[in-house]
Amino acid sequence: MFFTHDTEAALKFVAALADTTPEASDSGTDELAEPTQLDALLDEWKYSGRRDGDARELAEVREARARLRDIWLLDRDDAAAAVNELLVGARALPQLVRHDDLDWHIHATELDAPLARRILVEAAMAIIDVIRSDQMDRLAMCSADDCESLYVDLSKNASRRFCSTRCGNRMAVRAYRARIA
Image (tube, rainbow, N blue to C red; front, side, top):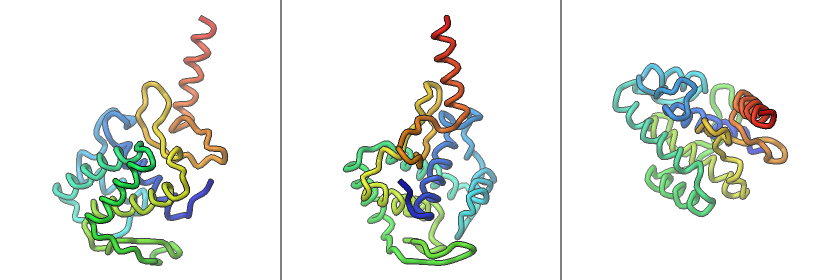
């Protein structure tokens, strides 16, 4: 199952954003503690539009991160209600846009809207595609017993269980050691 490019990109960004929490990050710390860390994440994901770079914006994005982590693991009906709430709250107006090196894709806020609002609305628009295609199981949390990272399962048969090869290998080693012990 493959989603459109903008949907995949938005979902992958949400997973990366959600995985900056202390319980999900590789470092075990909040990887969005400073505005410079937010800038680095946005640069890495080529996130366009307005950036204020201040403490207020960082706090709003951290709040958005928590909301999106919660939505990620909801069942389909609850996710639909949460997405609708986000879109109504942002007064989203979907439009096709083309900018930078990206072809036509959907934006539902202005590029100068506050960053947290744009993140929430773009995530909501991507999750709409997931809900409409009845693929909520594609939004998952790592099955490793010591990892809470989120990921998008874009495998052909929806069989992915771990956020990374590292987590999968670590769990395979543990299972092997348990079998031979």
